Image (cartoon, rainbow, N blue to C red; front, side, top):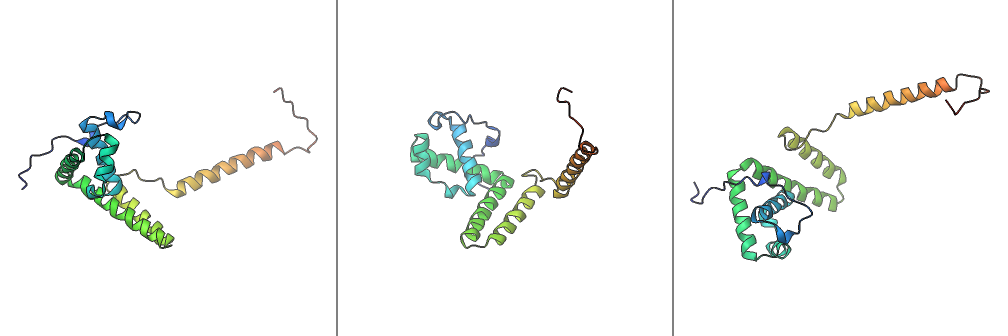
Amino acid sequence: MSNKPSVNRDYTDILIDEEKDLEEYSVNERRKYLLNKIYEVGLADDINQCKMAKKFNVSNVMIHKDLKVLRQYLRENPEKNHISETTGIVKHAVKKLLDDGKYKKASDLQMDFSEWLEDRGAIDKEPEQVELIDTTISSEYEVIDVVSNVEDGDGDEEIDDDK
């Protein structure tokens, strides 16, 4: 067991005002932003500390401390860490496959990953494609019925636009 103190803060609960300047972020807002970046890239080590320090107008040491706290947070919440690491690995693999021109394999990997996330409740399940097709077909039949009802006459009927 680690001798580091537990991170008692759940950074996923913090809301960030998108219109607020990064330089005005509180320490917890900054950490939430950095946590989102970790989820985006997959690993805290992939975060460029110098760039983040400039963005927030804080020292590199401050960003280093923030990332250290977030690493501890992710160690204490392995379900969040596992998904973020897997996301990063899959993103890198899909990019590599696309760069190599292996589009079908990249698509298959992305689809498998989406299903994996759905199974864990990390993302909402996509609606079944069959339902969408059925709705489209029934809509087309309704349109055809309406059109055929209008054209049932001999074509000599006048249409009163005032009705």
